[in-house]
Length: 227
Image (cartoon, rainbow, N blue to C red):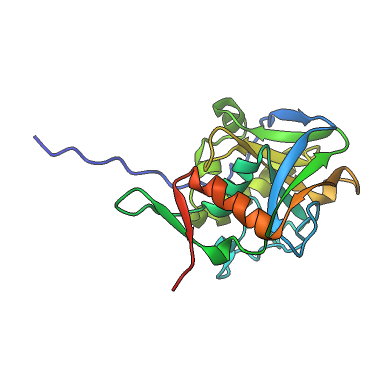
């Protein structure tokens, strides 16, 4: 009798070339608060104008659903709560040591802000939050929880979904780093100025460092100076 083999995790396939379904809609109502962790030199409601050139080194440094030079547009990431925004920003591919602790260099936290932003107008998003939502576009949770090495393919999915759902102003999914929370990406070419706005609720500098460190500690992550 042969020994049991550990099942392999399938890599993320390319989007279907002859898709004829309908992505699921999720209305995001005006007045909805969202949170962001962002560099302090950029405004809380600022869209990133930098598209990724697919196939070049450094492509893993961006986010899961960044725009690409094949489908360029400004984009903005957010989360439904501050803990999810911290997890999405800082817990990517972070391994645990033999004690179960994870470690993050303090340089990764320095210079960040935690900000609340508001949805000022009703928006229409494609939902990727549930198994049914993902099946509606022909994929499963590999799209939303896969590692950064899959980002060249997840970005192709984002471009395909934009093509299938020309009404969509963004995507929302269950965070792979904080499954109790939801993440968002907004398409700047489909959102008018002022539809997402900054608020006075923004923490930067030492206060942000302390807040982020406290949130990270709840994920068993220690922020330490590198020697």
